Image 1 (cartoon, rainbow, N blue to C red):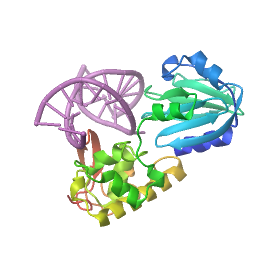
Image 2 (image 1 turned 90 degrees about the horizontal axis):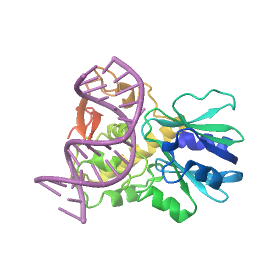
Image 3 (image 1 turned 120 degrees about the horizontal axis):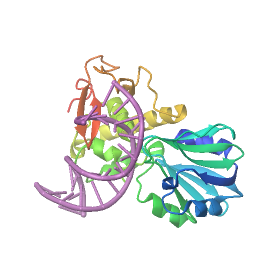
Length: 250
DNA sequence: TCGCTTGTTGATGG
DNA sequence: GCCATCAACAAGCG
């Protein structure tokens, strides 16, 4: 989403209008109303809040959430639409919302309160996390650390893959009970979140280079990029976790 | 055909 | 009240 934000900030200084290709992508308005509310105005600011993209225009804001497979792509005006393009933001250039699985969505907000209401409760943003904020967010909680990292109300911006990456860097077992984590480990976890998120955001995606755990994600017999031992897969917090039993002991 | 997948939400049960 | 699990959403892939 950080990459999508950069793309929009660079190419979307003015909104001519929003062309909705697949009506189901607009979640809280009729496509015509979304277009009417946002057309023919300058873009004041493009912000990211956790996994949300917020385009602040003069009279209203457009919110986008990309689900698992959604993306924002730059396209020339004459580039053909494919079946996965759901909407086109017409401006200085065209930005298209593309999504294979249709879990991405667009929302219209007419003021700041509306934005907050749509996004709902969010924890501190992973990219601006501090050790103190992380400690506060985890305080008094039970359950696995991985489920907490993926919970947007606790820390905003981390999903399944980034959480695995962060825990691997911090050498913490994904199933580790929050109640047993000591301050030194919280500090280590915080450093891992900041480092992993900063490098991913800069790249515009989670790097799949050999030094990253993510490089082993879809490998049949994954091995640890650090100790080269075999990695384990298990289900934690309802999603598949990849972790190193040697580097991340329970 | 089955089981899996980078996200979120709501129901249900402990 | 908090937490875990599951189903649903949806479509592609091996």
